[in-house]
Length: 274
Length: 185
Image 1 (cartoon, rainbow over the protein chains, first blue to last red):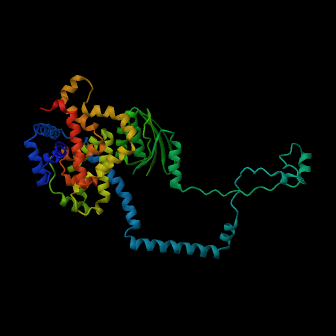
Image 2 (image 1 turned 90 degrees about the vertical axis):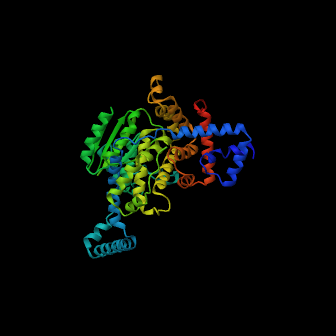
Image 3 (image 1 turned 180 degrees about the vertical axis):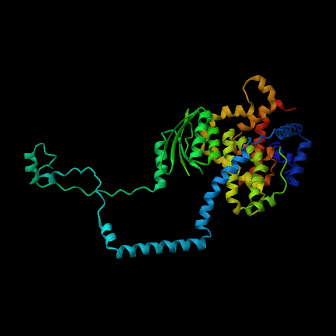
């Protein structure tokens, strides 16, 4: 066995993790190689040093914070379980319920004249700029009349044909949850952290957050809406880890956007919801 | 190196059964180990606590999938290691910017000579040497030499072949030996 092959096995030798055959071969090499014996002793001393390293301890209150975070996550999973589990039973039942509701809606719509009439009404037109007309289209046609400068012009304009108004595109509204998330991200500037904080008591969380930010030497501005509060917090970068840790005590914090390099100070945009 | 915990198969069964106290016992029993692995890997106490908390929450969410073929502690170490390595992989730039500052903080509470002496120059050098290892070697030496896992447990936790564990551990120890040469007899 060469010195290189023997030394490649030193770590496993120290851990008594060599096979019998390997162990025999390494021992035989060591008998005749003082350099390798010295190298093995240095490796053993290194491992002995590592085993003396003082192990770190979790910070005070860690257990409480983990349990609080678990409680925040638990109620959501309980709700989901109640809605969808057991899957083979609840999913078909819920699908059947949806179909029944849809059929009932169609039946009611057909049998109620007022609802039919309402369903036929066009949605209000959305103003979009008219597309530029081609030269051929405008040939032989007069320009579209604008607001008349005086009554005589208005009288004259009444007789003239108006150019067609292009059909408006119907806007598809975003789902409320996506809208809220987009709102948070939109409010957060470039380089800012954005996320949501789900709490059981929005007002209490709001107060606790204000106190936390004050304690960390940051600033806070908020805007309350019906179903959520949007808060913009600025904290020194050094205080950001403490801020995030304390957020976890207030509820379930989920960062939706967190830049790899944090600026100084750090701006955090939160959506606090019950 | 930490003392290895006793048999935790009973705790795993109680966790699967949804016993309320079982999760709290798990966190109390393993908080320092999980936090310690995260701190050694990430070098930042705030991030280490986030990752440690997430590791316990993942165990709570996924305990139904735990078959009991491995030890509960090995599974917990596996989740913690994966979270640390993922965070390092995605947040490498932030780690480098804060890394130097944090390595020094880990190695020594202050940078002045008096505090260095107080903490022990050797301990500081050990912390620094471990923190400077490439993460794939650092995780192996943390699990083996600081947490006391066997080669097989490390292989299972990191989804590696035992031979790969052996070679990475050897490389890591050789790196540390070179860095700590002046402290060796």
